[in-house]
Length: 299
Image (cartoon, rainbow, N blue to C red; front, side):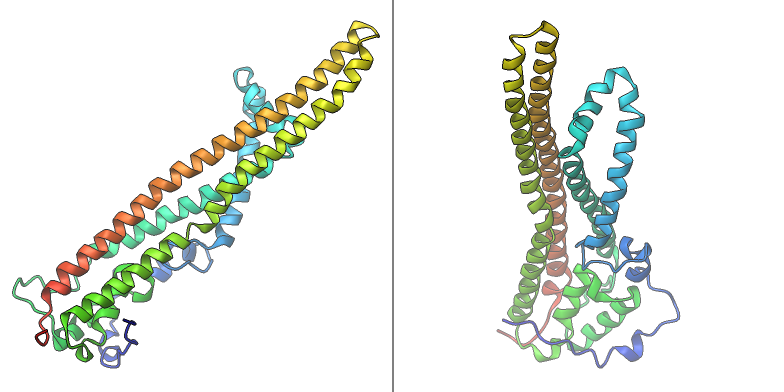
């Protein structure tokens, strides 16, 4: 069943209020506050996360160069990221911090979305029932509480279910509308992780590329080692040093990439779990305050 078109002709006259809304998406959404267009619900604006990734990567390498690299116990860590000019570790770190930026912004946006669960557009009266008339009162209260319902997962569902309640004949129709919107929200939530899923695939690939480059360098230096074997011992040591350096690059870039991908995967899993829990809470809220309160024509 398709969602009914929005029909709020009865609402605008009453939704205008001199009081500021309790939840103002335009002024409180993280991306909106820093001057960028906010992504829908918990989706993240890729431009915002891209610039955050550049900033975090630059900060990370400043710590590597001027911190870890100058402290003897952590020099080996710095060398892992700096060896070979950082051809592979730099883009690996950038993709990692891009994923981290998305997940950090998502956490902020999810916390803001959860605040809608604390709003009370429905009367506290246990005898309250939803019908076409009282639904309009609820919608007016919803529009008083927030600046725009389209930007809130929960309130967007409620509005779609109640806006044309007078045209719906059965409770099952309302339940179907809510379920359809819930499925849409779940699909939107899953699609908001596509970029991270792509990077989780790309980061290990970068590590394997580093492995190939390191092995190629080591094999190329093997010929020099054989040539140096008939010369003095110092030349042989220098050739062996080139081989070990290439092997170090090969295995260290893979290690960095695999650890980065693992961290992102675990972090993303916990974030997805929190989002899924929030969507379940929205389902419970709609059932408790909408479906269970409806009184329409008999089935």
